[in-house]
Length: 344
Image (cartoon, rainbow, N blue to C red; front, side, top):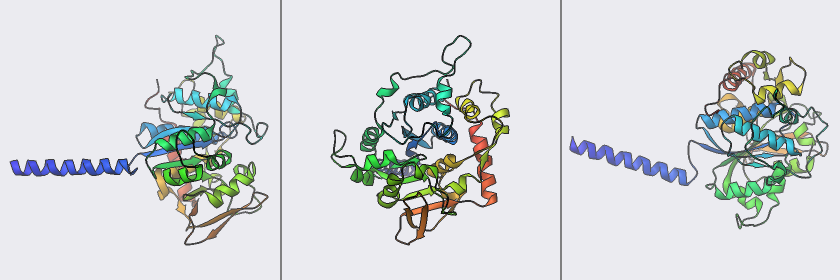
């Protein structure tokens, strides 16, 4: 018995040691993730953020930061409201200045939620931060977060324009790292997951691409890690239902994502889940989807996207069949309607 006990103890110590080595090397079951979002333009960004907080609660991800590529103070303040409401107030936020012109493209639901007041005239939702215009620009926050991460350990989920990402690639050495942006990304990032493009119809110039075509060209052509894309034609097959927004959140009281959904368009409406599908792949991998063979992705001057199979390529895209679409929709409803574990 004594020998058996010693043997078990040695095996346990060995397993812990191996796990520690994997963690130091960036190989952990918990994904280090940075979210890149144009939150405030389309409400599916808010649904994607809900998924991320639930993944944090479940211990599946470390949400290292949220970087925003929609200008103005409202997007940063809205993310602070979300961080606070979901019980993760310390998640860093990076913003953009002189980004794409998109303020009049849709109802800014982020601003609508930020402006909400209770019966006493006080803000309807609590905040943690002050001075949203003083938040760091996204490339600066990226460099800080990446410099602190283990090599080859970070997944970036980009569900907006590529402006911040190209600016990151263009950065030089600074207080955080001696590496330039491209070398820092190559060293620290293992995967970029984007919501972008349309590979079924070249006449579709997808929004995230056309708002900054030069940046999209560089990201698909020169980004130094593998890239997996959830395209327009996938997200439109899976719609988050208005019936869920109207009926499944009685437990929540005032809910910032529900209020955002209501503010975005007159209810009732079902909304495409472009961004949640990118987040789903970034965290849970390809089991929900059909994943293309490796290849190259190119972007035309007009914003069309094209995929060319190439065994040496590092780009892939996702698709779904009807059964997969229904399974993903049910999964989204189950997760998004659940109560956050850390909500105060």
